[in-house]
Image (cartoon, rainbow, N blue to C red; front, side, top):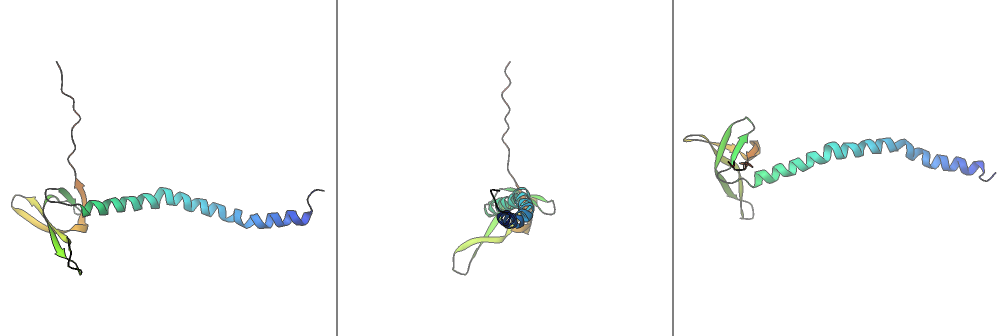
Length: 121
């Protein structure tokens, strides 16, 4: 016999507990890459989009109202620096402006350039 029974039992006991947790670790890894990570990236993208709001951007609010940003207010923070306000003035119709919270804006509509080629005769 090359390996004594005592060593074989010890080897089994040492890696037996790790093999029990391996499926749980793999499930967590799948959840991380399929659910948690994409959600974090989308939240980061949304935060950047709201931070870069400017006059003239076409936006959609959480209630589904489409409008054009007319004014992004600035306020002074506790250090005296100017930072973007949490309120944004949006024009939703001719001469109809409303003030919405920045967090209620769900989408900024960017104009898409057409890829149409000129028709040749």
